[in-house]
Amino acid sequence: MLIAALGGLFALTGGWLGGTSGLYLGVTIGLGLNFLLYWFSDRIAIATTKSKPVTEQQYPQLHTIVRELTNDRGMPMPRVYVSDMAQPNAFATGRNEYHAAVSVTKGLLQIVDDRELRGVLSHELSHVVNHDILIGSIAAGIAMSITFLTRFALFFGGGSRDRNNPIGPFALLFAWVLAPIAAAIIQLAVSRSREYQADDSGAHLSHDPLALASALRKLEAYSKQIPAPATVGPAEAHLFIVNPLAGRRSGFANLFSTHPRTEDRIARLEAMAGRV
Image (tube, rainbow, N blue to C red):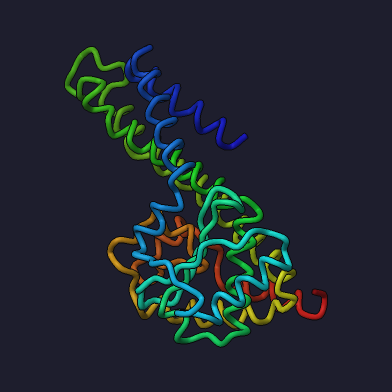
């Protein structure tokens, strides 16, 4: 329903700005981006984070934990990657269980023990099983479509000085600024709710919610001290288990965080201890 509503929004915006041709252009842009993100979201994320495939000989314990968890969950073994990022973090990507990949950073492997690593991987594999990656990728694509369409309005609508511009300079400014913000807020709301769900599913998969809570506590502290590489931006932030841009944020930017407060996530996991 959310995706359909957003799709209708940018289609109508395109029609408002450019009539029938604008509507077709808006729909084409949205469908094109969503198609690319649906089929290639895993490759985009892997390339952005400079993750490299690793063999069981290189990282035996990492592969062992992933295999045990996937066997317990009854899902295929995903591709396993390690990123050179110094910031401790992890992410999963792929449109379904059969096209999935999980990546951890070298920074993560340096600070967590095997129990905490199991908790982190349980969370990420839960994202795949819950189809969060697919939903997040499509939501991100629609948000990108809205942003592109509104910023294209100056050219396509003839510019604010064109008397034939159907929305005028003030309405154009409104569309330019507020439409991308609205799209971002909706996308981030989806991300936040699904982080809680992945925490819950991951705790049940690992049978150890306190392990994930302990890992989150470490990751939150280090993510504020060690910046993510410049290649990781807001479009990729929702993939990670903790916000990789935490060290870059201002107070106002908290509104646009792709993750719930880590303290809240830890409290929920600690409340689950003894019940999983």
